Image (cartoon, rainbow, N blue to C red):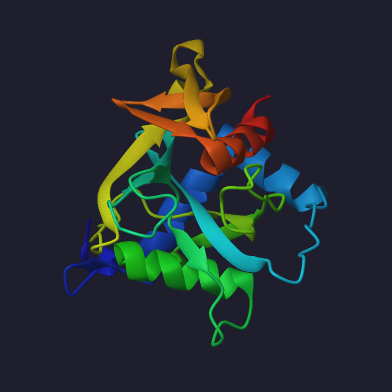
Length: 216
């Protein structure tokens, strides 16, 4: 790239816009944008004790292939999702003007990834845990797209990061089943296999929502 593309070793605004437009022109991404714009997401109705949270389903397009970002949460005491595969995100804080702000802030804090340099595409339906053993929380997933070469700097809350092609998640070989013991009762949940890890629970439900909007 020439000088118009580089400023101090970083892509210029014009270059980033070109990359973003190329990514959004991908058939899967244009389909996703159109469907997000045309649907009305389902809002949950929080109970008095419910906490609000937001996560970011972050996409990029590399060599013509859309990829979805996952994190593996660090093993932390008192975290009910400790060690789980997840999306960057967290709880609404008093200084957050909205859950969209929460999603952007948490992604920046957990990965040093600034979503405002990319594009927020919309949001999915609110979700709540189905298990009564988990905290009463409502999670709002937002969908964003970023440049293909973004750098991630995980915080102490993140053990690992994974960019996974959407095509792989759509393939039957990625479908799995997660079996867990809940209060002495064996329960089975649909899941996705990401390398040696299993994506299940709230994260699996978010992935399923997203794939339904991408699939022709």
